[in-house]
Image (cartoon, rainbow, N blue to C red; front, side, top):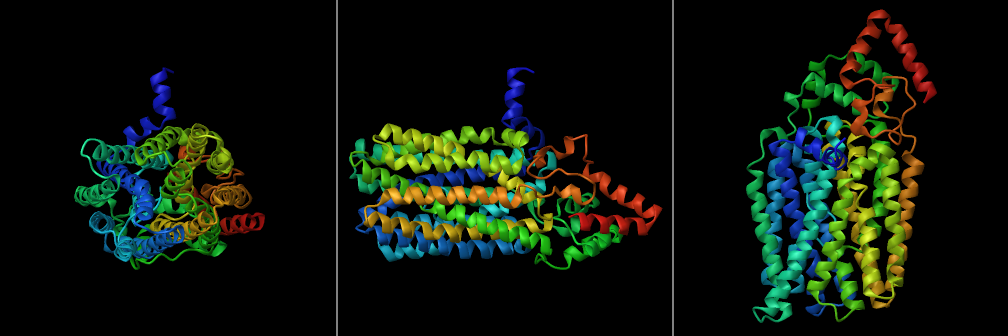
Length: 513
């Protein structure tokens, strides 16, 4: 295999080019622009509030209230997405970006900024805010074949980190250029960054009009293959539900799904969602203690000679390293499996993070940040693929919206704790607590999901689990697994022989589980 072919395969670019569509490319571009805007805002937000005369507790409270307000608005819009239209929800979220960016560009009043942050969309860190991510991930799962899903999610993560990196770099340069070439006071450059944030929000509004109707969750247009995909992606069902899934025709299933917009989750799906919510909450709280805004504030506080543009360049390099690492995340998942890829790439992130306060100089601190970020972002693609694999397609938007709400609410408590430790001059404790919680999250993933049955195992005898095989290559496996289109045929043949044998096999399977 030539090096170019190997590189295309390992970086998942071949799969993206093969299965990509206009809608997929627009979603990736939209996320790149959004994270570009988030990067610029995250770089200057903490310093902007600090130079406006606010102390650590006020800044921490501001960020916490921002995240809580965003959580409520985002969750409400996400739950309405499949009812009022996904493109419309993405458009509303972009409008909220314009609103928040405009207020921050023209005001320094603490309470006006707080209102704009709560009711608008603005980010205190590197993580997603707004209704965008859940809707986009659910849409990508709908637009992408199963065998390419992890690869497309990998590029969805790459556009995030690459946009964040470029946003940090360009925003840092803008503050430098305004001070050096335009003679502005360095504090006057921050509103310009928020003005750019509002402009990008306006561009995102235009992009939503370019998305096609294929992005919408239209139950009436579902085909028989969609229903089979639901059955292949569903968690383990009860004996009663399994018998019903064999005998209900596709038309009846579609009518039942279109009868309601609200998602009725099975008990098994609900259990998985609760476990994931607990784990994601722990990890998000840990990440919320040290978002980009607070990391840049920490660097500015620890190395007072460091100016904003230098911090921006350094953080840009950190996120560029994360972008390169994300290119190979799908390849790692193919070799280790989803759960092991999530854990073994995320665990070094916590270890490097714990040692950052001990770095004796800036260069060593920057290297630790680079290593921590490179490993910490590689779990995004396998995590998204795992969530998409273990829930029904009709549940995905609601599930991803719920998980996004959990992550946002949990991360909201982090800045307040960091602000408290800042006032006590105990920054080291922030890094240690964050690292310990991240390690607990990784251990919880292994304990709860290492032996999770593959969705296909509900219909075929197999000992494989999600931890063993990446969902992106299930259809390429020729030993032990059949493609989803064969499942309905196999079930029909079983029923043609003797329905009692099918029920007997179901009972034996349930007893085994």
